[in-house]
Length: 276
Length: 276
Image (cartoon, rainbow over all chains, first blue to last red; front, top):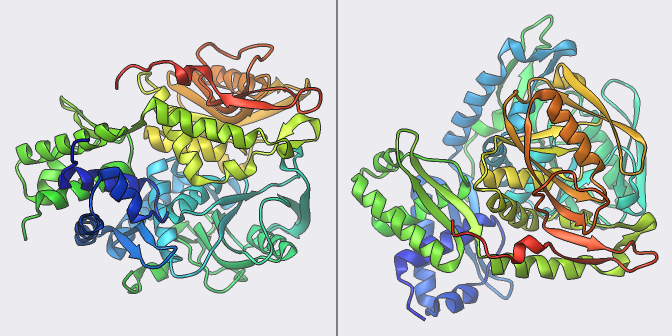
């Protein structure tokens, strides 16, 4: 086998690490792949990490010990995140997006994988210091964002359904009060999750936390702790907060009828973050 | 500004390109970012492409002309894809996965972002030579796979709904005959797509193409051509093929009642592919 040069090793390792964010990989796998010494691979990793860090486009971090390895953390600069979300907030504040009942047309944004990936990375980094076992969402509109968040976190995505389905096996079903005051139901496969796990709820939109409240009740049925919530767009002053420590990306005020809808990045995004 | 070394440029460019598959990026953006000559950047790109190609983990391709630029194509080796899918097929053939009615429990696989990403890349590469404007799926279970396929293709994801929703704006609704013979409906926002576009249908499962037939009818209403279909798991000998040129990843035979369910990679995956 021809020896792979450092330049090439860096391209290959960066491709593999970036393709699977927050998935730990053993250094020995890279040593074997390149027939290289562990010290060389460690130097390569240090070069990649320095380079990404210098540009604010992620980190490649090493964890020691038996379960140790190296993983890509897709965290950008807080300022870049804020610029990205500010631009999006302006676009979403367009009055033409307001639908009857004060709803906002978001489907085109939710269907853009580049935007969803970027938001998924911001969510992943917002919760990176909290132990979480899976991402939870409620069908349907929140799935693309929740999928990209779970991909960026290297965690499974669990999707609650409105009704139990034959292909889910046996399910747990609950009723909850929606934001509009009606009684709705949601359902989750009993095989999907386990007591004692911790979850992050990700969804596209919340006005008053009705669906989120339902998801929290559903998790209680399974003995699972809700560690946090992130919405793409949340009401800026909701009548009740579903749980403390919600970190949404955008917040809105106004109903599009009496007051125009105004959307801006959530406040926590402007606060200085701890270094990762 | 300190000059960025080639090693570091390679790590940075690989991270950016791999993060946004099949999204064309101008070389001049990289020249500005690194304050480097176009010839140096072109050499970097050639090194990255050679390295990824040598390992069968993708390509970095340059297109010339006004709309030209460089993009990452996340195509692996046919043999690696086949190995990956064979292993998954064996796991899915476990009799414990068979549910009443001959359904197969797939939710845990559909909730694994690493598996979905890999499958999304295989789908993206299967259709890379065909012009496609967006990926289409029907809610709910197929969305994670369709999302990862659309991400790998750098295209929007459009999700048809069972019912029209207020936050979709005005919609087009159709009725179709499901595989079980019942009349179902599906709905799509009129803003979502445009006449003359071409779409790839991606879904998790098909037995007899009922839902796919509905999606094709829905696209006819919009004047959109269905260029292809890819399912994660399709019946190996369906009573009718929805359209020619379907490329699914896994096929199954048996109903889990009279015959055991057997799952294997689809045949086209074993055929030699043209070089990309």
